Length: 115
Image (tube, rainbow, N blue to C red; front, side, top):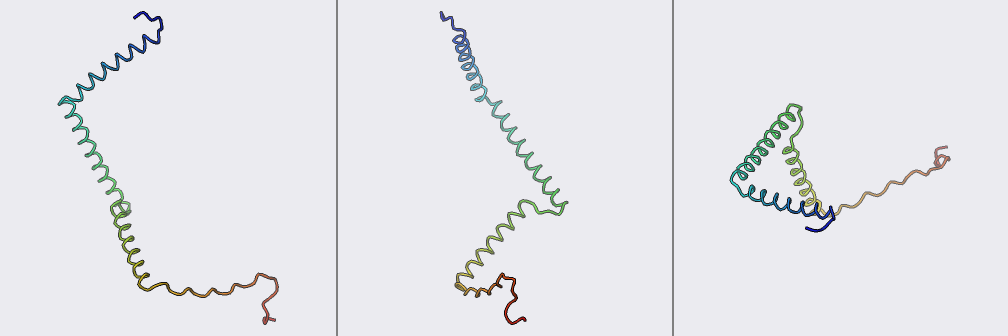
């Protein structure tokens, strides 16, 4: 290399280092050890999530609060009730609206007939 640009030398060295790291990483990712390690990490993460979920359920039960599953169940039940109400309203048709009550006038004078 005959270039006197120090940045060009750095870019070349960085490119070569990236190629080498990619080759080593690719070979490692194809190995059985990597697959076992990833499987173990995934299993550990799932076990941790399950343990945390159980702890949260017990803590909510101790605080007499609903769990996420109970809230979702209530939401689904409420949705079914609302759908049933809509069907009932559709069968009954639109009920006539109540006539509006006359509002009192906003004056300082008393209404006629109260004198």
